Length: 275
Image 1 (tube, rainbow, N blue to C red):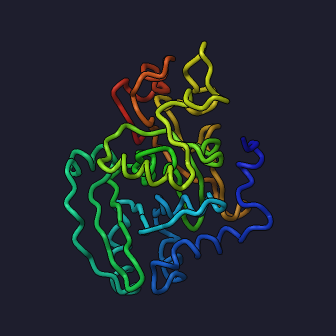
Image 2: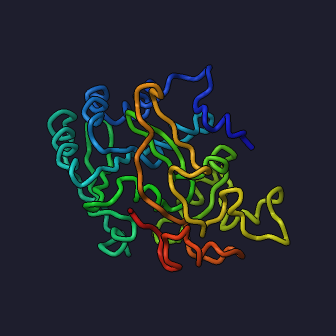
């Protein structure tokens, strides 16, 4: 398992600089990737999904089928305008998926999701609800693997110790394509479980809650707690990321007090709160 120094230090010295790696993440989908990065620099925008995963997990072959952009309600129009007029993108109909509607969006802190198509590829634009932390839908990902983010200023992950060990915990099962997604990432070499108890080197028959190692699905988490990875592209220039979302992967019992405790913020039935 990586040490805290390794997790905090981010990319290794023999890898590409973070800014170049971010450019490489967005370039396959954009006509003018440099213009896009300049556009989002002053905005409340994060890249999530496989794009963020490929930025962090550079030794794993992650195929990015579509770029996922999470945008605050205030900045949503700026992004759509830029994609339309600078990147030659147009909106394409999203496929109809059962159970993905207003209730699903609310559970993920989202107002809407649209797909924009450039001459190079598809971009999913997630518009976050007003007055909700922009990292909220990333925290509500289908499993811990995608609880990660990157933008021009910051990058990080909610579960780095599992991420860099190619391990993940499933979330609450509200995403209808969980099974297909799980099979896809298992084929890519990730070990995805419902509980850390399924990993022999971690399992403890006398203590089933793994909150001490930041591996409990019911544990209340933040992107600024001691179990998270929180990095800056330019540490001497940029302030640490500001985020106020508190989340848990699921409310399934963990054998401890996490469901009822909720970090003093989440009710036993609650998946997230944006303070």
